[in-house]
Image 1 (cartoon, rainbow, N blue to C red):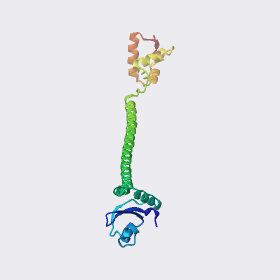
Image 2 (cartoon, rainbow, N blue to C red):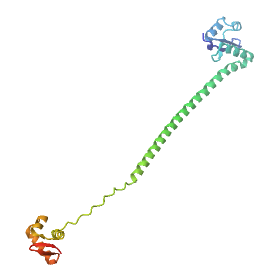
Image 3 (cartoon, rainbow, N blue to C red):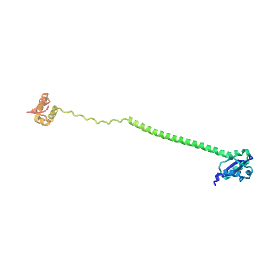
Image 4 (cartoon, rainbow, N blue to C red):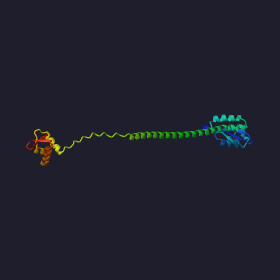
Length: 212
C-alpha cells in the first residue's frame, strides 16, 4: 500500500455527534461504519454520514492531524480538518499563479531577445549601409593622363629640301634631292627656283645648290 494515501475523515453520527478517524480507503471504511464493523463509537450511532475529508498524506501525519482534531470542540472539528486542505489549495493556487508569472516572464524574455537580435541586425545593416554610402561618395580621382607627346610638325616639301641643302656644305643636285625626298623632278625644280629667288639657297655649281 502507498503510505501517502492516508486521509483524516469526519463522519456525522445519527445522534448528530462527530467522529474523526483515519484510513487509506475511506469509502470502504464508511461502509464498515454503517455495517457496525467500524469503530466502537459509531457502532451504536448508525447510520453515519461523511461530512469532511482531509488531503492525502503519510500515516504518521494523518495520526497527528487526527489527534489535533479530536482536541478541538465539535463545532470546530470540520474547520480544523479542512484548514490543511484549504492551505494546500491556497498553496496550489499560489503555485499556479507563480507558474503563470514565470511563463509570462519567459515570453517577455523571448520577446526581448528577439528585439535585441533585430536591433543588432539593424545596427550591422546600418553600419554596412553607411560604409557603402561613404564608399560611393568618395569619388576616385581620375587616372593621370600621360603627358601628350608633342606632335612633331610635319615638314613641308620646301622645308625638307632646305633641310637637306643646309646639311650639305658642298651642295646637292636635283637628282640627289629627288632621291632623298621622293619628289619628282618638276616639284624639285619648282622648290629650287622659288627658294633661290627668296634667297634661301644659292647655286654653287651647274645644277648644284646649298643653303644660304
